[in-house]
Image (tube, rainbow over all chains, first blue to last red; front, side, top):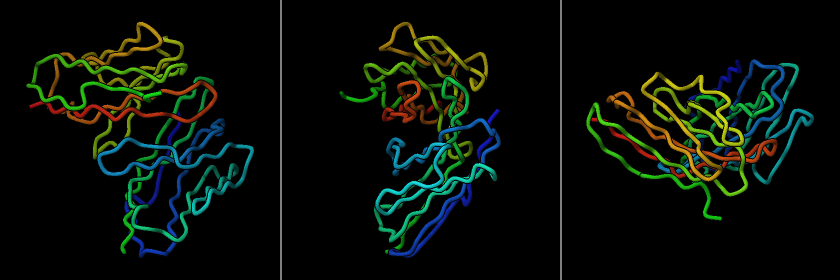
Length: 112
Length: 113
């Protein structure tokens, strides 16, 4: 089955700096890669996603890149703000019934 | 739409008791997922349904866990008998097959003493 590895597990950055979180996946058939943000005590919510036919996608301060050959994808947050502090999960979809495998999460702390 | 609705939000029970968690997916969504979240193991997929049919239950820890989806608007996750190591937050999520995004409920926090 699919295996998703996520690094780093914790990340501290100064407000205004950039943050990068990286994930690798094992199943070359995976075709959809979302990122979820989970604030403390809340539910995970989708913040950005990318499909396997696209190399990069951007939404304001957030961008995701995908390298299908190397089987890795990354989340980039620029100009970080304290409200970006949360746990971020990457995920990979494989199989016709959308079997979703999550990474282990990255706890991002933005220091004011 | 009110989103995915889970109940109870919090449950405290004693070891050996039966626990039933409930989920109402978003109307029109035909895929439903049960996840367990702990600090040690992160988000684990327990089981998922498509059109009310269980597709993959390989994540269900053991026979003490069972899940049903009798109709498109309701699913249950049952633990019998419960053990302290079952303490976790259990999330239900739904989606439209092929659309990708998972919509999570607020979760059910289970504490087994």
